[in-house]
Amino acid sequence: MTINPYDKELLYRKAQGKKIQNSHEKKIREIFTNNHQKIAKLKLTETDDVLNKIKKLKLKTCLNEELHSFSECLNRFSPELYQKEFYAFIDEDWKYYGAIKLPKKTIINPQFDFDKSVSDELRFFTSDLSIQISIDYSSYGSKKLYECTIRRLLPNQEPLPS
Image (cartoon, rainbow, N blue to C red; front, side, top):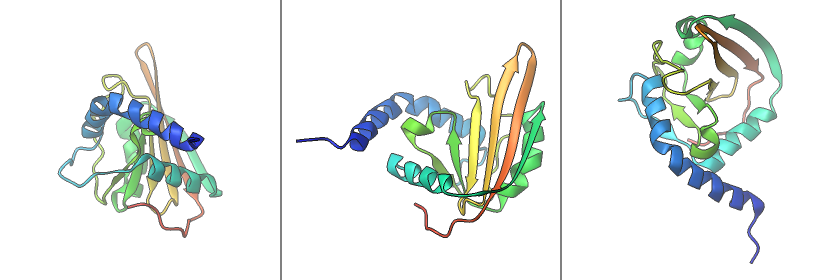
């Protein structure tokens, strides 16, 4: 019996996801303040499907800024997400745990501490995949830098996982 390489990879990723589950779920609680809202965890295959669809899209516009606080980043992009459902890909954890899908009016915590949470990257995609927002965090001594990028993509007409 031969195991499909993708299935073998999924088994490995799923096992690794169990190892990081507690720390990843803690990050989710710290990033999104209205946890009473329904947060849907995507399966690894669903996460991969979303990424494959994103890879096929064409870039329409891109705005990239380096900012000195997370709240500055939120001021730039939170209106883009607040009225839409969106996917969140947190650090590299999503590779092993899966992405999450959040409902409209989800509130992102402006006090989220990347250092305390051992986090350096957040990616958000509107559910229609027309907007991608990324925050890459880095710190050098006492200096903190947030590279905030907003990409507008040509919309995708294919349905995505719920």
